[in-house]
Length: 122
Image (cartoon, rainbow, N blue to C red; front, top):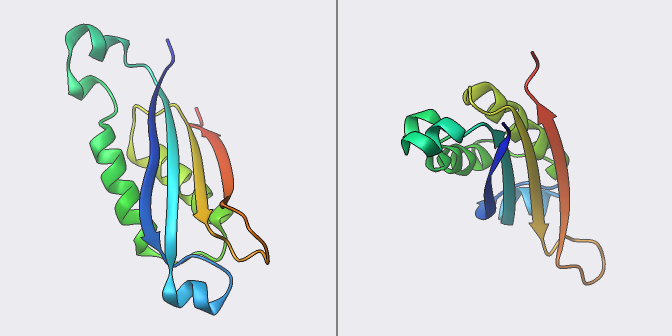
C-alpha cells in the first residue's frame, strides 16, 4: 500500500539565488514535501515508530535549508529530495517543491517554483 504524508508551505529564510544581493540579504522561501510511504501498519497500531515522523522531516528541512547557499532552487530541491531518501528508511518516494517568493524577474510574480520527484533505488 502507498500512502502520502504532506508537509505544505514550510517557510524558511534562506540565502539562495544567483545574485550577490540574494546570497547576502536572503529572502523567504517555501517548500512542500510529499512523502510516499506505507503507513497502514502505523495507522492500525496508532504507532509513530511505524511511519515517517513529519516532525523530524520538518526539523531536517529547516536545518538543511540554512546550512548551505544554493544559486538555484532547482539544486536545493534535488538535494533535499536526495537527503530525505537517505535519511528516512520508510520514505519510498518523495516530491519536493521549493518556492522563491518575489523573485527578481523584472516584473510582478508571486513566486517561482521548482519540483523534483525521486524514488528510492532498490
